[in-house]
Image (cartoon, rainbow, N blue to C red; front, side):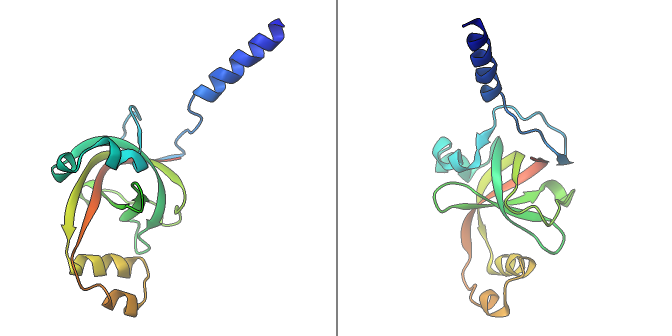
Length: 153
């Protein structure tokens, strides 16, 4: 019985402890505290709060990375919402082969209207076809994140 209790306690502690340890860091170093899943961003903060900026730390799965030099990425941010992540002052980049990996991001989230020119630039960086790029004809209001630092899990 004693062995069972000790084993159960050890299992409980192991399951309650975060097991993901960063494998690489980019940009400013930070302690990953009060980490919010990126998919909870829109339910945690109001649209009014995000109209300005919200400083936060998020855990996210990368959807896409800039294939030109790793200067931006996109992550899921709620139901059918995607968030563009750029890096503070263009001061660091991430590897281009990390799509579908998990990261912890520290920085600010906000809404922005992105111009047609910028949307086309991102589509080109992502390797989209000329036809797809030409179909981009209207600005887009989108969720953005400027990361001071990124930890790759």
